[in-house]
Length: 257
Image 1 (cartoon, rainbow, N blue to C red):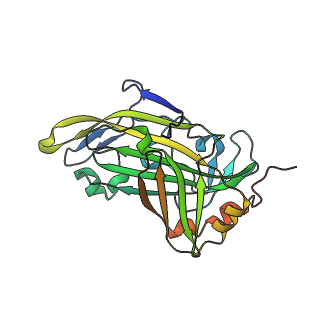
Image 2: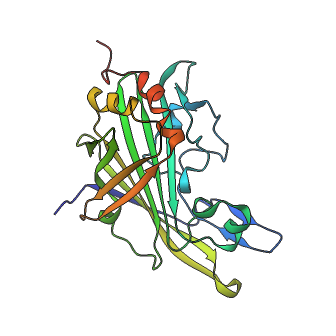
Image 3: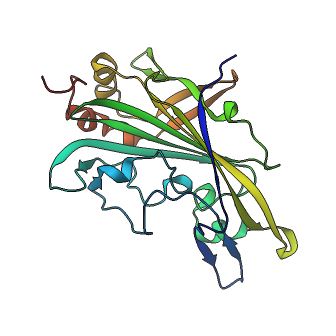
């Protein structure tokens, strides 16, 4: 049985308050989440500081603050130097609470019982190419095993062939969980737990070339988790179209000589 090494971090509700969603309908949601060194600032749509892509301490629910389906230059945090390119995609499932229904944000707005989100990072840097999957889940019963959320392989259908990427053995799988509160039926306040895993995948120039030449349409991806379960996730056309540029920064997927 696959038993990844997972660093689990319990976020003290007294340390971090994520967001407050207030509406004229008196719907309020207070979330306790994960801090990644952000100060609630949005990220420029065409530039991301390298440190902002460090997900070792987790990311906000549904990757709030990231630019999606567009190529962003990865900049050195200290000096004005371009280190790579990345395109980020996300997919969400689950019911909408009243607040997210009104705002149209659906499962991306915040943790809520039954929601499931995948945030994927695709690109290349000076030192090589990368693919990363961040899985977030807020189960109906507030209970989950991390093995249920750790993908060990991903498969993508590209030009009538299947590209399979395996979990990188050189990168530790990381897991997190945090408490949140939400408004239930009859405006009752309830609390539960949501979970997140952060997994990197090995990718070489052959795989990167397949992604660069992928048909410019929505692609289906199969996640196979450590417990054997599988899940089909779509990768949006807007993201797929940007793979060519994102992996073109270092198409050899190798560091400089």
